[in-house]
Length: 284
Image (cartoon, rainbow, N blue to C red; front, side, top):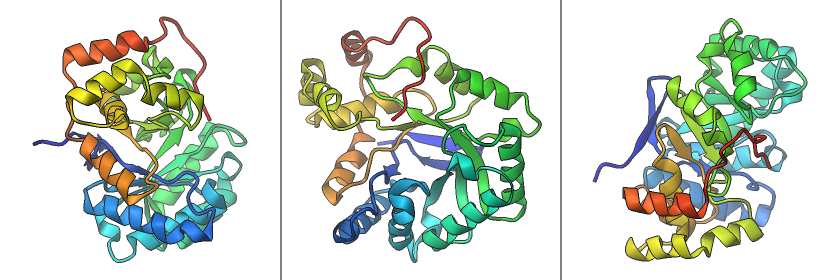
């Protein structure tokens, strides 16, 4: 069976489900389980790993570094820089610190975590400098809405942006109004974080919804796998669920093999309709 892939910058091809690391690296007692989960994911072909200097105050990058040791070239490594580090010498120092924690000499895709302290022009200049120094391969952004992307597109070098990582799941579909179609038009992949929704009532409502469970039963799958399959059936979208345990990673990998038919997609869309107007970008 052909598993769905997504291509960044016309050259980085990865499966449409990656591995997220938010909340990793926070407890030493969980480190070995987290490392083992990421390694299991790599073995299953989930070769994009997403992290950030923010996660676990650098601890998640250290977990990733341990997981990829000895197999760095198998992995597409994504990390993110704080907005207050996203320019000038602070940006170079932040990237070098991430590289040390990751135990590598390059980050394949380096993202602005959200828009803030530095102007987008200063961040583009930083990313170009890091590329010239060989510290990063490509760069992108996270949590930028449609208008932010239009501003970026007007800057010299702004169109080298390789991705936009945003919150996206079946119950949070605001990006479908303008941001997602525009990114698809630019052939710029969208990375969907929290593709199963955050923990809590909303996530529970999604996983326990009758429509989701009915389709899961048909596919002999879990509700979470159906939610992931729904996200990645959109052109150019990669889901990055948290790789919290070997069991979860195995479940995530199997979701790549699920293809929803038009009727099933319509059923899910009817249960959780997209907004018919512009809404603020969802962030957590």
